[in-house]
Amino acid sequence: MGLSDKISDQNIQANLVADCAKLVDEQVAAKGGISGLALKAAYGVVKGVEPSYIPGAIQRLLPEALAALDPMWDEGLQSGDPVQHLIQNRSRTADMLLNVTDVKIERARNGAVRASYNKLRKSVKNDVEEAVPGLAKILGTHAQ
Image 1 (cartoon, helix red, strand yellow):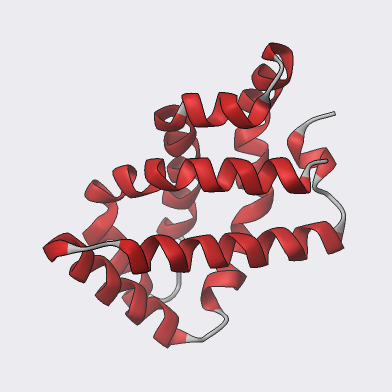
Image 2 (cartoon, rainbow, N blue to C red; image 1 turned 180 degrees about the vertical axis):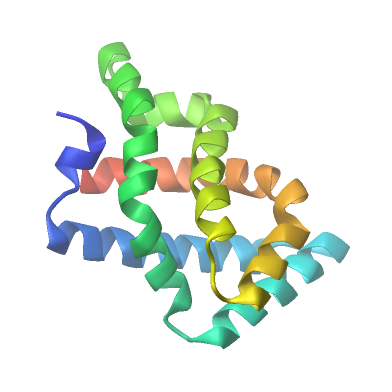
């Protein structure tokens, strides 16, 4: 049973989305320096579009993100610990997730959201990699 199958229940998905939105808020808040200011500004624009935009975006991305991570999760199950497998392969995990967001953002109707994403896309992989341990633990909790 793949990750997307384990997290198909709507109640589990709602809790997962809430935990992921909190993780994103924490990751953005922890950023410092010039790049952190730029990220916080872009994030503020996105959140300013609509307060529920981030949880809504996570919910919209969830099916494709889980499907993208299914092969890696299965590899981790075979090695005994899918959470650690995602963490140990955080660059690959980040690439899988970013491929999903890249496809979605191309179709985004909101120009401000698309422009903010495109401005930060080149530098965001490191940020996603830093979030992978937290995300992997969230997935592990909700896939039980």
